[in-house]
Every structure is written in C-alpha cells, then in structure tokens.
Image (cartoon, rainbow over all chains, first blue to last red; front, side, top):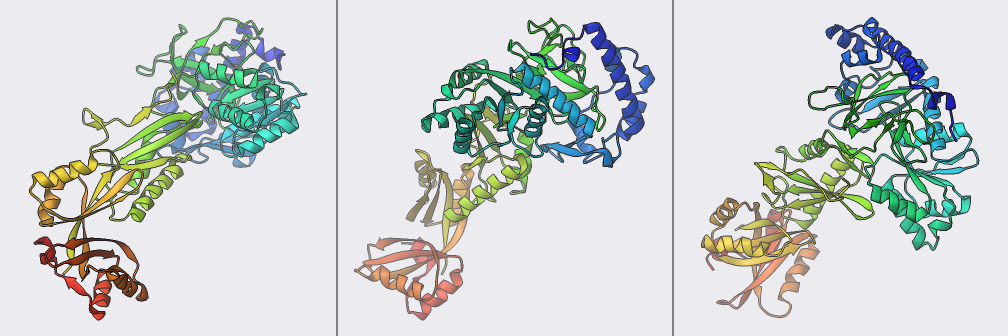
Length: 433
Length: 143
C-alpha cells in the first residue's frame, strides 16, 4: 500500500520542479519574515531571487543547532505567535533547548508524512498501534500519534514505562503495530516471556523503531522476538519530528519525504556537497513548512543517499540508517547525550572541573550509563552518609541536564586513563557499529 | 586535646588499602589506630598516626585525597561494661556519634576509644562533666 501515490511515486523531473518551487517560497518567506535569515543571508550577499535551481541551495549558509538555540524560544517563527498551535522541544545540550513551532497546516503535514511512513510499514486503518514513545515535548510520541490517526488506526497512547502493563495491554487489546526504541523493544519481549505471554502469538504485524542507534543484528533479534518485520523511522524535532524518512517493506533504506524535506549530504570537514552516494553529514531543509521553516540544517547524523527507484514502487530517494555522528553526541535510551552536558552538571558541584568518564553499556538489553568522577578535596567527606549524598547529588544534577538517570561513582584521583594528557571521556561498550 | 585524624578516600578495589598503607610505611609514618568504613564502591580509611602533618604530606604526594578530621580519645577500663558506660552517657545527652573505633593500650591496660561527632566541643564538654578521662593528643601520637 502507498498512502499518497501522487507524492510518493512522482517522476523525478516533476518532483524537482515541485521542490524548486517550494524551496523558492521557503527562502522568500524566511528572508522576509525571520530576522535571523534576513541578516544572515544579507551578510552572505545571497537573496531569494538568487535561487533559480535546486543546486542554488548550496549558495545558502548552513543552519546549526547553535543558531536555533540563540533564537530561543520563538525567534525562528515565520508567523504570528497566535498561528502557532503547538510547540515541541529537543533536549538542551550546552545551553537552551531548541523549540519547534507548528501551525495547523504544519501538524497536517506532519501527520501526512507519518501516515505515509506507517503505511510503508504495512499498517492500515484496521490496525491498533501501541505507541511507547513518550508524549510530551519530545516529538516521538505525537508524531506517530498524528500519523496513525490520519490513517484511521486505533492509537494506544501509552508512552514509555510500566512495562508489565504494556505487555498486558498489548495482549488484551490485540495491538498489531508497535512503536519503540530497539532496546526498549527487546526489554518488552523479555518481560512478555516472564509473564508467560509468547510474543510470537500476539499477532504483531509491524514494528517501528526510532531515535536510537541500532544494528542489523538488533533488528533481526527483534523481528525474531515478535515474529514480524521492524522498520526504521527517522526524524528530528527541528524539522518537524519523526517522518522525515521511513523504511518501506523492502527494508533497504528510508524513503525521505522529498516533497516536504530536501536532503543533502556534505563532507563535514570542508562542508562541500557530496553527490556520488558516499557517506557524509545529512543536511535537511523544510520545503513546506509555515510555522518555522528550517533551511540547510546540519543534522550531524552520518548517512548516505541513493536515488535508484525502489522495488516498492516509490520514487523517493532512500537514506541509509544513521551509522554515526559528526560530533560527540551519544544516544542512550533514545536520548541524545553530549559529554558537555555532563561537564556542565559537574561544574555545579565543584569549582574545578573534575575528571570524569562516561561509560555506556547494554548489560541486559537496556542501555545503562555510568559516570565515573574523580574525587577531590572538594568532593570528599569524612562520612559515608555525606559521600553517598554527594554521589546522589551529582547524579541528580546530571539527570536534570540530560533527562535520564545515571549511576555516579566517585573514583580515586588520576585513576581515569588519560591519553595525551586529556582524559578519555566516553567509553561505549555497546558495540553498535 | 583534639586529635588530627587522617581520612583517606579509597576505591573499594583490591590492593588499594595496601597502597595507602605502603605510602605511609615508606614515609616512616607510624599508625596508632585504624578504621575502615566501606561501601561496595568506595571506602574511607581513618587513621591516627604519630605525625599527621607528615602523614598527610606523603599521602598527598602520592595522589591520595586526605582530609584532617578532629576526633577525641578517651580512656576507659578494659573491663566488661567499659564501653557501654560511655555510650550511655552519650545517649543520655543526645550525642549523635558519627563513628568510633577503639584500641587497647598495652602499657596501662586501658582501652582507648576514638570518637567523632559533628559538634566535638559539645562532646568534650559533656564527657568532662561526667568525669571521663580525655587523653591528650600528644599522648596518642607518642604512644
């Protein structure tokens, strides 16, 4: 099934014509309505009328997360605030978070791209979808929700957690579609078995993954647990949310909704566009967004694009799954974590930044994060109670910063290995490559 | 009167206690009394030595984190009931002990009890009022 044949199976020539028209409109709106773009483009001496072909997009400067952050909270909106009917936000890294604003039309488009995606995954109006993505400022929950409702599916907006209850509902309600992060999915499968429920007999038809790095082995494992296919869903809060790209039944890359988002691959070092299908950093542009058009956003995600027509019949290009980052962001339990956030939290407890090390493991299907912190005069007290208190306090500060719970261990000075004088900050033992 | 105790941060790992004690032995620092508070991840080693300043110096030179904590020493009869009589006094006076450890003194056949509370001055006041013998710090260092 294809949700929107007109858009998803368009001839490339027609698609490019549509993309150019929408790009021109987007750049014009951004330039006229958003002071940030007006200033920046003027500085670069580039104006909306200079965009005469799709390749001309390369003349436009990139947009970074820092740019968006500096416009916090509503500085990137292209419409009057009363037209914005919903906001979402991505986690703050070193400063303020990034806010994404949506008009009614933007929510409709978001629902449209997710409806296409869920259809690609083989789901339709007869299905019951259990959405374990969190509902809140995070876009994962609502994006899936809107898309599923647009199709006419029955949505169980259960969010993450309460795993035993999840399993019970899955079984009692007869969920046929599941949305989860791969590690949570594995955990769900384990809990189901503990409850003597065979995940094979649940009648799950399709699974959508999001917001976490995973490997082909993990996919196979999950497919085996639930006896159905599992598909990759990609998206970013800055651009709308999930639905930028979704895998079709062929499971050979994610179809990017190219009439809505314009993808480019660049070499992160010299920032030149890569067109030969090689890997590089994904850069995305909103082609059809009212509330907050984002132009040439550097995602820091590493992927590649291929243009060959897919056997599923869609002509939309496919991006490979994300295999890495150009920065030091880690994905833990589906949440992006930067070492700088840990640093920020540690500076709240000690005037001198302590040496620390982040250790990410997946001991029992679920990600775990431990932060080792070298003790110092400031972080040492002659009492077990006080020591436990300081460990908990550090853990709380880090949790406030990154949104997930961590284990904090105080270690002896100079016990964290250093290479060339600098401590090795991150040890990821999950082996996701 | 107050004794300078060295409190040392240790990770709960094989060999770590030895490393700390070895540093003291190589620095010719003599240990009078020792106690170890441990959790699954870390430990606090508390020691009274003959020369706390020197002890701290050699440990810090070897990357240990050391804090000097004031404690007091009292003398009690090395007989049944000796310790509980002291604890009774503390209890009746609402003293919340953080920790204590004890050792026996060969020469005098007396037991020495080392005590720490948040308000050490108040502790001293109450012990004096109850005629408990507080051992001067020099006497402990020079045992």
